[in-house]
Amino acid sequence: MSTAQGKLAFSWRYGAVLVLFVLLAMTVVGRLLYLQIESQGFLQDQGDRRVVRIEKIPAYRGIIEDRNGEPLAVSTPVKSIWANPKELIDAQYAWGFLAEKTGYTEARLRDRILRNQNKQFIYLRRHMNPSKAESILSLSIPGVYGVEEHRRYYPAGEVTSHLVGFSNIDEEGQEGIELSFDQYLQGEAGKKRVIKDLRHRIIKDVGLINAPAPGSNITLSIDLRAQYLAYRELLSAVTEYKATSGSAVAIDIKTGEVLALVNHPSYNPNNRTRKDVENFRNRAVTDVFEPGSTVKPFTVAAALESGKWQVHSKLDTSPGYLRVGSKSIRDMANYGVIDLGKVIAKSSNVGASKLALSMESGALSAFFHRIGLGEATGVGFPGESVGMLPARSRWRPIEVATLSYGYGLSVTALQMAQAYAVLGSGGIKRQISLLKVDGDVKGERVLDETVANAVLHMMEGVVDERGTARKARVPGYRVAGKTGTVHKVSSNGYQDHQYLAMFAGVAPVEDPAIALVVVIDDPKGGVYYGGQVAAPVFSRVMAGLLRVKNIPPDKAVETLVGLPKPVPPNT
Image 1 (cartoon, rainbow, N blue to C red):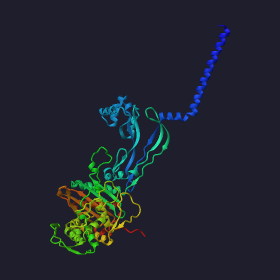
Image 2 (cartoon, rainbow, N blue to C red):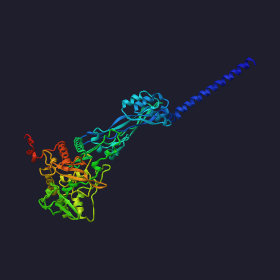
Image 3 (cartoon, rainbow, N blue to C red):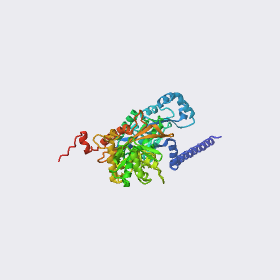
Image 4 (cartoon, one colour):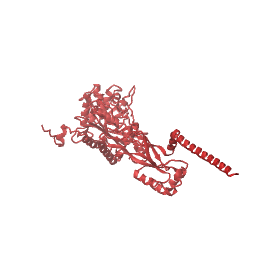
């Protein structure tokens, strides 16, 4: 090949290569332009899928507080530690450390990881203190991550546990107010975009999608100060008399608000490891019992309302017992001829039976129904018992007689407190509320005011020197109330040596403000009468409640108890 031919071939090859490179460059540039312009959205989405994640922002559950704003249930930020077993299985060097920090034994943690090695998510520890969780996360152990959550905390513990209830680890209401108002308390979680690395750690917040919406707060009617003192006194009595349990309910007569509601035994809602499910029961709302002599004031009220009896009417209870069919109804003694006030003060079964039997058949049951006995109170508390009040087309005399002194029907402590609030309000029945009420509560008249006030004054005789409950008196205040001591019922009928001791009443009589019911279940040691066991608890709790509510002492008793008379304001 000549020199000229060689140069020509080289130039041709050079040109071809140059054209090829130009074409390749144009192809690359064209592809880049295509990716940059036409496929930008697609590529951005694909990139985001690999590093950008949607993270949930936990929402605060609403606060439950008492009427004065004291917190009863709050949510606090915590961290939960979780793991990807597929990754963690390659970090066996850290298993011992993790076991120690998360509360496992090393063998148990190892077994859990191996059993779940095909999964991508398991919790190692829920709701840890944030600083303790960070001590684990700071080591960047492969497969170990953290997530922000909230934990429910109950500052008053067992004192308010039966009323407030509790939520589970996922902040879902399980008992009490937490359950009945769960939909109001629950917040709505928010969302945000974040960039995570290959270890699922958040590198950067990209942007907010939806802000979290906190749950609604709930303000209860109870006063935490009243709740504490009621619980303290109830616990003391249950312990002293070795009783099975006890309950106490206090109601603001003028509004229908529950000021205190306590039970014992109780439980600590902050301790999730306990299994004492039996103690979760709010006995004041769920447990029913025969009210015994605590209904006698209502029997007298029904008799007065019937028009067949007057305040000063007399009836003969001699010789201390009454034959009704084949049954004998007995008093503690032969009280002879007594007035209606003495029927209440002496707790005469014979007197109450004669009053009931003088009325039309079914009249007493209808009266009890009207004031709320054997009826749900409508407070909306989960598991509230209705109780039982017979409604018959035909009543046998013995059924009417036993109903008059509190047998043959069943009620809750809350129902009894509502009924006594009716007497204290002058015959007005107001809706019972576990939530704070603003403004006046009108209610419904279910009893003539004159009758209600007359019975209220008769009930003062129960706590005087000759009554059955002198220990229920409150220094400085006039108290109206009634004892109750009933045999407990089992599958074998009434028990001879097991009793319920009760006291129910209102104060101050001059201007009734609070109705209070105390129930002590099965006191031991031979002391079991309501006037002995429940009346002292009533006295101490009522005294504290009146102080909490700033109720001034009754003028009629100031000089009797040596209280200083109020100083008139300067004019």
